[in-house]
Image (cartoon, rainbow, N blue to C red; front, side, top):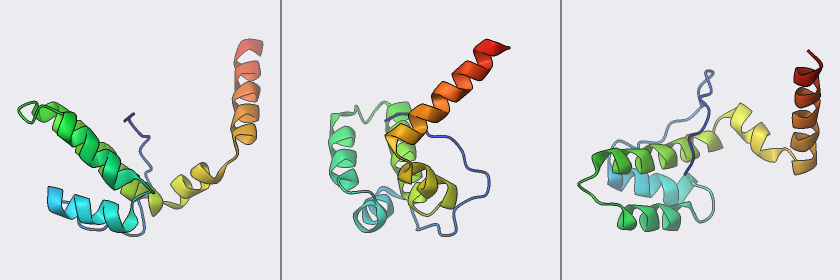
Length: 98
């Protein structure tokens, strides 16, 4: 999982995710399709003594649930690849023109 940007407005809804059981329930109910299974796969592959890795995995999946309820996050996910590519090209052109 890659780090996700912070959204400062905050989501409108925060399901409880303070424990692994709550996170599993949130992923099953509000996660993106396949998130729960992918979470379990990543957690199973992690060394549970490596608390940094376990924390990284849980934070990434908590963020994915929160992203579902963040208006900015939802809008970003709905953008087409063409739209994002055009924006990146425009920004690169602006940066190189300076």
